[in-house]
Length: 432
Image (tube, rainbow, N blue to C red; front, side):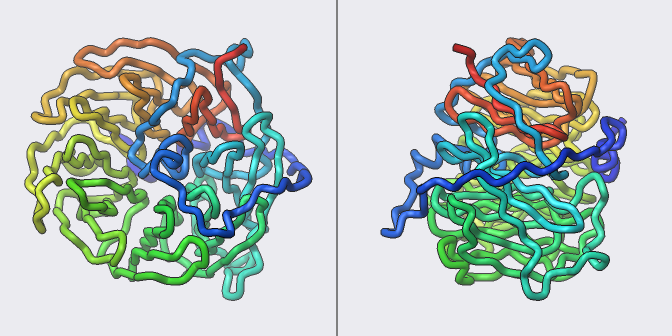
């Protein structure tokens, strides 16, 4: 049995009733700011933090992280703090040094929250509801109630923080929550609601803006909002882009309802595309060892050799097993992990597509698996995180719970994990 994308969104109704807690007040702002001298965050800085959905380059690898393998809200073990989130949102946390960023929204306003990473206190809230051309209450775009207006995750280069909502409101803020620039994009015509997360380099912000007609890929200058390029796209999706370094070439890779496609981040020129999808695509690609992996329910999983710079990468293998509905795969040079919405997790050989093992969990996954050295962490719909070794046999090495549903993908920074539950933000770390 497989769930459709629609059933993924509706699954929230089965897990909890959305009862949101009162909003917290804004705390005094600190003196941190974007560097006026135009300092660029280095790749090492980006790797050590969690600048976007699924981390550095949105590839699902938690570089330099050393988190615990067990924790429990029920017992308090390895729980550093927990703080309430006052509005609904499905976006994942983004972390830079001492700050954690989240988006939430309702029909009144779309909000960016900034929390202190050390203790979970709310530092500031920035509300977005005042842009010229923004849809007013009562004429907001159609979204599923469970998904809401804050499904896309934010992106940061360490100095500017960008957020986008299903209303087409795009905003870029400083570390203090001051608005640097904002744009009202065309209100998307998207029957589930806009869900593609943002991604950025040190200087450019990329927006995959898919809708039923007129899908586009944008690049804006992160510091000023200046449009750099715009590329028309044929199809739509609810997936998010990834950035890859491929034999000396940077590529922005997107999946949609028909293709996996690569674009030049500097110009927006399409470098190549391969037709290998069908249906409603919500999972992003994974990249390791020169191979690009894509998988989504409704089409076979594919491994593409992206290491050779051609206009049509060779398909190495395809596999038509249990495939994702919303969660994205993750890979290293040997193993590919493929999650599903109904609890089956598969481990494939990256070179051949051979299935090393399959493991059936009680519940499925909306949150994507993340790789920490030779360990994989994945959170199920009940908020239980499963930790296992990446190898030819399934070997569980730990677990954690937060006692509430989890749909967002966690963030891993140093010894800590930041998990967004349906009602709270949790910080997991090694107890003193």
